[in-house]
Structures are given as C-alpha cells and as structure tokens.
Amino acid sequence: MTDPKFAIRLAKAEDLAAIQQLFVDTIRSVCSSDYNEQEIAVWVSSIQNIARWNDKLTSTYFIVAEHEATIVGFASLADKEYFDLLYVHKDYQRMGVAHKLYTQIELEAIKRKAEILNVEVSKTAIGFFEKMGYQVVAKQSNVKKDVAIVNYKMSKKLDSQENVHQEENSKIFERNELNF
Image (cartoon, rainbow, N blue to C red; front, side):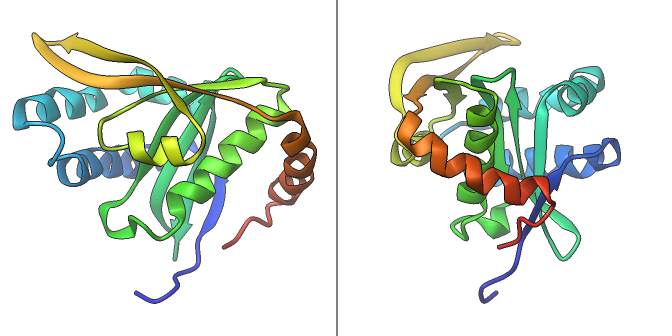
C-alpha cells in the first residue's frame, strides 16, 4: 500500500461494531509480543460491556480515522485532560494514523483549555507516547478476572506557545477538512 489517504471524523453510534472489532484485532495482533494469551483474553473481553462502549461514544470526544470508508483507527478524549483510547488497525501501523489521531486529540484538549494530558498506556504503546513528549508517572498492575495486566500512567504538560499554533489547526478539523 503506497501513501494511502486517510480522513478523520467524529465517531457515530453506527461505528461501534467496527470500532470494537478493530479494538480486538489490534490487541490480539499488535500487542501479542508484549502480553500473554491470558492477559489479551481478559483485555479484549471488555468489548462485552456494550453500555460502557456506547457511553464512550456519546460522552467523550471520540474520533475515527478512515481509509476508503473503512475505519482504520480511533481515539478518544474524556473530559479535557484524559486521553482515553488510541488504537490503529494492524495493517495500518506505522503509516501516520496514530500520529494524526493523537494530534487531533491534543488539539481538542488545548481547545478545552487543558494544561496537561494524562493517559494510561500498554507496554506496546509506551514508546509512541514517549515520542509525543509524555513522561511515565507510574507503572500499574490492573487486576481483572484474577489476571494482572501491566500498563503505565503517563502525562504531558501542554505548552501554551504551541497551543496558539495548534488552535489554528483545529479550525480545519471543525470544517470537516482533515484529510491526510
């Protein structure tokens, strides 16, 4: 695939099935070198909580990246300072999708006057977030269904000088013109 074009848009309720499938497929393939089968099984079982997923779609700033009308990634911002989700389809890794989704989430946080962004990331995603300027605050062990799953709490202070430039860029998204 050479230089595919992507569009970013707000998620819709009818996207839920595709988002959940991408979530499961990404964890099973992309995270398999960092987590064992039992950890992955517990992690992906969270899609069974449909009410929680519907709540995320309706109560957070939730965006998707599309390629030829197929959702290839998604991200969400809860409140103004919590970067909740960032997942990219296994076949679209290292193509700039995560970076574009990340940038749009950060722009939205800035628009909401956030001074810091907090995130909890997997072992798989820690390198990406470090490149985006995040610092590890704590290593965590979350126990679900008697299985401990390690992740990292990270944070990034948002620079007010950078914010002015990024607010200009966010106007492009508001006009539904964010294509890359």
